[in-house]
Amino acid sequence: MRRISGGAASVWMMTWMLTPRARRKASPDESSASSARFQSPPQSAASRGREAAQDAVRVPLFGYRKGRVSFSIQENPRTLPTAVVELAMQTHALQREMGAGMVRIAMECEKRPAETATDEELQEEPLWMMFCNGKKSGYAVKREAADEDLQVMELLRAVSMGEGVLPGRSEVEGPDGEIAYMRAHFDRVVGSKDSETLYMVSPDGNTGPDLSIFFVRLG
Image (cartoon, rainbow, N blue to C red; front, top):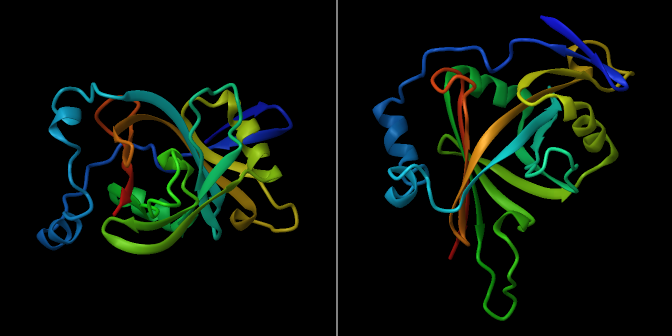
């Protein structure tokens, strides 16, 4: 564990999710249960190097160990997002899934009726049904970034990729009072106005966790 000092607080770096590990193979039951939602991206995007509508973004994920994990998408690392997505999953549960290997998160919302439809971008939708590795988790919510969210992202400005903990609630002692975070690079692939995918880019291209987040608008 190493300590990095900077800004208003010190960041304690630790091995959390970016330690190289063998990938877990899904069982036949898991594969069949997940196949409906976790299809490979269309051949036009995947087999041709994801050449259509692809860009690289940074995605910080963070949350109290016994609180819900949140994330934001930063196209420009020099600016702070005004909104975050709060997942229907506690931070320690995501840590456990990441430690086991492959993680696929699907975020589904329904198209609005034609009379109320807007040109709103997919990730601007306010409410999502979330699935993690094929299992329904509950509702994920897009919300305005609170002061604490902005403080976390301000502290992470100097961290291009990594994971660790940040000081959190001073009145809570031990790990439950700390904010765990992971900041990674993702490829964002836009399939259409109703489908996007974020693919985590491993630091060395081969090892480490395998996380993808799928956004889809159905109906």
